Image (cartoon, rainbow, N blue to C red; front, top):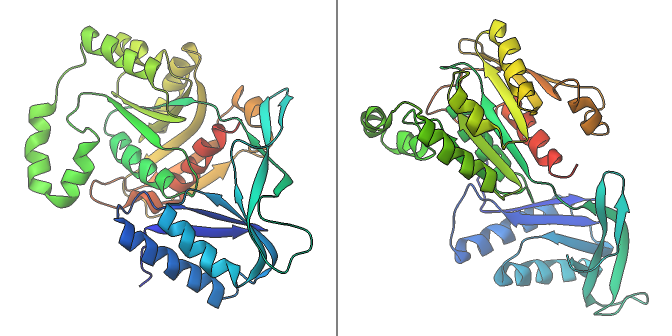
Length: 332
């Protein structure tokens, strides 16, 4: 069985992407041990082969940076670390970009670079956009289950923005419910009825304020399963929508509702309780033509199977695909 590490790494070209596994909270001592273990596994398998230079990109504690530097200094002549404040900004029709630049922190045996040199790259990083995504659709489709699985899937992606969840459906299943269910199912089932309530105009106005003021890059809003004036109020400040329904005949009315509010529909997903597999269908060219496609159709369609409380839904193909789309949208 593969162990789960509290620190993650992935080599893409010359860039070693690093970061904390936000689904595995840990103290500094464990994080250092995990970072060393992951790094040694990548070195032993020759996934990190050594050579002239390597760039480090991502979040590091001071202790972890020492571990990484010590191991890589034996394999590379030059080790350079990303500095987000460096790099020339350029304006484009789709937004502002900044070239990624790295500062040399280790140099031995290199005639090209000294410590303190800045290495300019042609790798561009877009200024990120805030998205406010409503999870909507008929009741008992599994929206709250999808919400929790989606949050975990996003957190598992190296360098992904933190997904801020707004529970705007007083159905007794706040963000706390999944964790409580996993640790004490009977307690979660006992608490839910006492937290369940109707959506009132007053609640809708308050929830709309939460949505309007949300300022994380990824904001996920879980709303009730009815097309009502209250949901209209809550959803109005959002930017995008994901429609989840167990009945395909209900998609059209939710599409009309979302479009009437000016929301771009990211995904349309059929929730199939008794199915055994997901079906994931991306629109052709969705990454290159994101904004153009969103004007007329979802980027992602298909189905998700067996949205049941207590299961680890973050690894489902549809949940992984939806997480990929949401992360991508912050760069468009």
